[in-house]
Length: 447
Ligand code: SF4
Image (cartoon, rainbow, N blue to C red; front, side, top):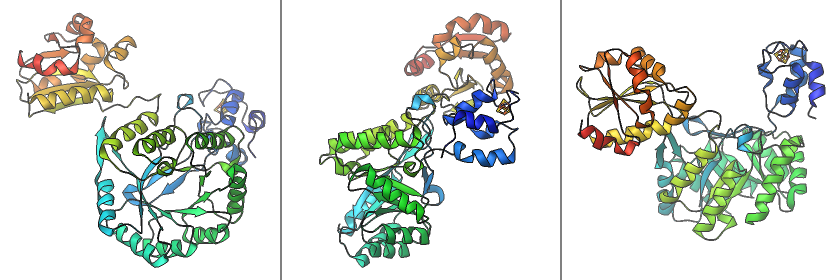
């Protein structure tokens, strides 16, 4: 049972030392009760109190690890209903479903597409995360063969789908130690599924056929049977109703501290709609709210890219802009005569400028200043990208050593800094570049 803020307060040192970043122990206790702070932030809490507080400080939604090695992904550990309240931590794993009744060549083609698909955005690699393999044949031997064949083609984690415990057991025997998710325990098979999941130390999805009460009942029984890593399927395949169910699950876990429903959710976008467009809509809904694993039935790179971008955007911490390391970056093998530009370390800014410089074919240098990950105008308005910052970066990274000239090009949006920068960098000529990255190639050509 979760503790209230006052109950937590009684266990804290009550010295109001502020080392946790909050003005009083009571304020910290209230934040802890609301899952908006970590107990680790108080360095003075006693070991006894720590033990007593562990339930209160544990994330309300359990962390589940899927797969092993470089392709392992984690879901759960979420603490808020809305991203702007803090952040969402673990983006949902996207899986493509194949069936053991499909032609082996067609399956191999699909698996290869998903396995090889990788795109980069703002320096972050985005990929699909898993293959779901369904035992549509109903035959354990056929299923095990299909799982073995797919495993020979990819290191991606699996969701193994069958209501037949024997089929899942046969699949687990050939899957080895790759830690798949078993799907699914139901009212009819939960005891045998619990034994299998516990014995093989893998996570187990539980599917309700009759709403959240049945789901809670099953989750309780599985928990009592010793299965710790659960994934919940509330059961509905209707777009609106499934939204209501996943929202209720998140609310019950976060607001009511109902631990038995505090597990990641699995959703089946391809079962919610029978068209590609419908599946895309369902997937976007589940990315935003509140799936941990989303199983799709179609894969199209033209669809995958916007879906992965949406996922990246929603699961980016709103309080920490994505940034690149400050320093000097080179493009097209620059020499000492090549031009030097500067901008901030906001990822989107860097990659917009870098893309234009790279594509222009013009040898050039780019000095990236530490502006706490803000874009040019935001950083300038916040006092994080000023003449002092730029001059400091020029000196820190020894920009002058790379050049036979002493010229630096400012982004056009901060032309106002040129006078101050001349004072900060005596002997340097300050040039003003274009406002938009897209105009850089034309600007550089006329230098
Ligand atoms: S660091 Fe601990 S003792 Fe100090 S104010 Fe915060 S909760 Fe209280």
